[in-house]
Image 1 (cartoon, each protein chain N blue to C red):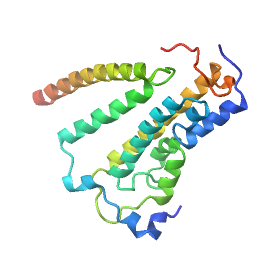
Image 2: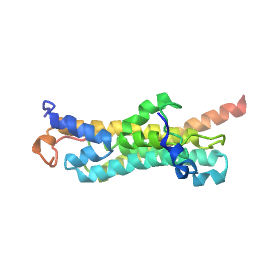
Image 3: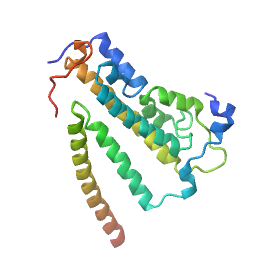
Length: 84
Length: 136
């Protein structure tokens, strides 16, 4: 399918404002990881639950547990790579 | 209480696919419509922004497109309007592809919620009043 952006120079010229920051470092990787995991938990926790306050609370609780587990895994892999 | 699937249920699920949150709106659940719609569309918009318009493409990323297409009309429009990287490196293109794919997959969760609400009998009340279903 031909992209309509070819017909519209403004769309073709679109550039993300983040491009000026340069390549992603570890901090930016971590920030995007936090954001995508949080949004995933916020949507998933909304399944079969109607009270949005409960949804957000349970999502945040699950997210924090997930982050703790992720931090432990990160520490294990960091220690392993330093040892090897 | 489980009910047979009615044509209206299928219509609401289809609406949820077409635009995230629209299925919930059709069921009368305005709060959840806004909640899910904003989350999924924000994630999709981030994917487009990070990929500079090139993150949704059925030709360049066919397997990711299977996941992206679950987000419905915004993805189809993004595929039609999307730009093609013209020699320049888009630094966050893979991240953009990831965000837009996850947005589509999360819209599947939203569609399941619409379906489950209908199966619990919510949609059968017409405007979809407060459900009696239990939360997990």
